[in-house]
Length: 232
Ligand code: MN
Image (cartoon, rainbow, N blue to C red):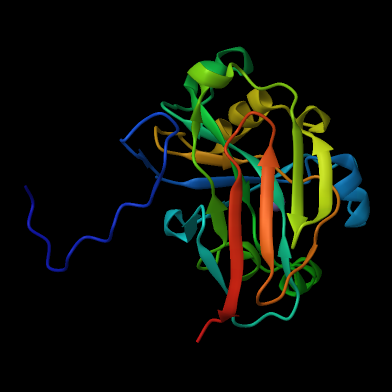
């Protein structure tokens, strides 16, 4: 074993349905602009290819956790998304081979500082401040694909304090899961432990301290998180 000059940081991980062992998270890839109704509510170009970006692996918040209201925003948004977890990877994965790399699925949230997104786009700046901040990636337990089969359609919905705000079907994705995996692997070598946030349907909106978010995809374990006090 190598010695380190500091204690190595903890390995981010997720619960796995039906297993006492945990899924180690390596990278979090995200797809933007993958549901037409959401593109329209954001006034974005409907014919652009999907955006690929990352969040740090340690931005994971597990089911039942609390998300501190982030600093430097006053327009903190939820985006409920289907999560795909990979058991293997590679470069240039063909769409027809993509399913063989899937370990399982979960429900997650791409939390967003929406006020900074507009500013970053307008100025051509990177959008780490918008998407890749601490606690920006709540993800529920992973259900192995052996239990679900390959997911092609399933209702996806999010409620805030019991009121439904997003209600759609993953079949409405513009770019399917196989195409997403293929597309990311053109840019990055995907690896076991990578998870992919596959984009959000319409109905995004702001939350405040004290709000409770419930996220569901039919057939998967739900995710619930609470918005905490403003981060110090
Ligand atoms: Mn998103």
